[in-house]
Amino acid sequence: MTNREVVEKILAYHPAFPADYAGCDDWKCGNPDAECTGIVTALSPTIHVIEKTIALGANLLIVHEPSFYTSQDGPGWFEDFPNSVYEEKRRLLDEHGITVWRDHDHMHAHKPDGIFTGVLKYLGWEHCSRTVTDTGLFAHFIVEFPEMTVRDLCRHLIERIGLSGIRYIGNGDAKVKSLAMVGHLYPMPCKKTHADGTPVEYSVSIIETLEQEVDVIMPGETIEWTVLSYVRDAVQLGKNKAAINIGHYNWEELGMRYAADWLPTLLENGPKVTYVPSEDLYSFEIKE
Image (spheres, rainbow, N blue to C red):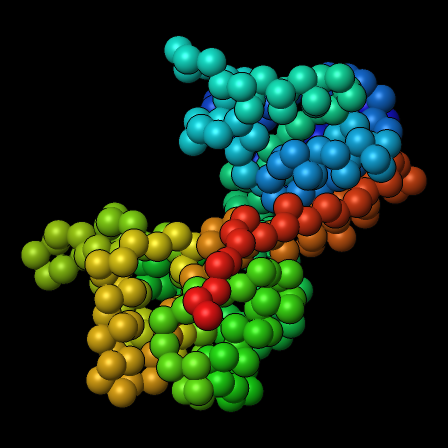
């Protein structure tokens, strides 16, 4: 089975996209027509992941996030200055015949969402969550769990995801029992509108969710002057609210662990599939 045949099976598994789709899901390097010797699923093709792929004797990397440091994520480096890190990374991929294919848009378009299904499964929340679809929010899951402290919730996430630590806003001893996994908190409108037809800011919708439905939010990306400032003020007023900021990559990591569950079912007796964690992006220097 070739790398291309593997990807064709993945695309047949996902919802069909228009013929003129020109998004980020594509080959990033390598030879699509090479015989596949093994598959690695990973959130990002880090140097660590590439080295693990080489050690496994695999030559196809299925990843979710960009390979070469730009939002456009083209199959190379196209800026007008040299990038030594890119050059060394690309040389490592080329020398070992590794092909990289990105599965981002298709995975999020899957029903249910292929990333969040894995996150909920491996956090142990797949049977206590519900998807919010009627509030104009983006990927938004509400999880209800047995009451625990904010600190215990953080420890649960550290253990399940494999984190070095967690940044959170809240009272560590406060007891919580509901969490919303929400989208990115940078300034942008959502689908909801005010009475005059102007769009509601996405962050305002998240504040509404905290006011009406949940104790904790876990966003994909953060800024500090909207929802996070609201949470800090709420905590200082004695309210039972918290925000847990584990980072976008750490949050979606388990989705690619889940990809290593469903991908073998498409390949019958095809190449071996192995999940390789990208590992925590952050290290922490703790105040003594």
